[in-house]
Length: 69
Figure 1 (tube, helix red, strand yellow):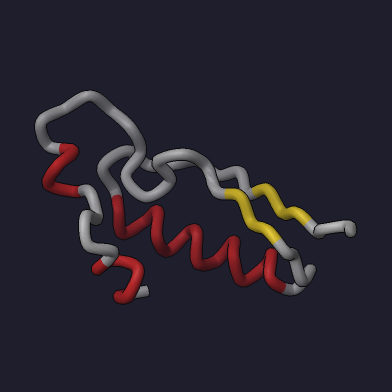
Figure 2 (figure 1 turned 60 degrees about the horizontal axis):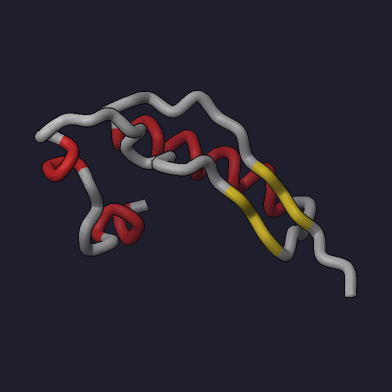
């Protein structure tokens, strides 16, 4: 059984959740035209990763951000 795979690469903006969600939404819209079975996003695509105490404040712990977009 063959599966169609889409791998999304993007410049993740550290600590810029609004930008990252908007950019992923654009890239997903483009990708969906190819009818993929699986879409792979970069690790920590929503917040970017950086070791900081502020990370807990921007993390989407309850998936609320996903519902916003």
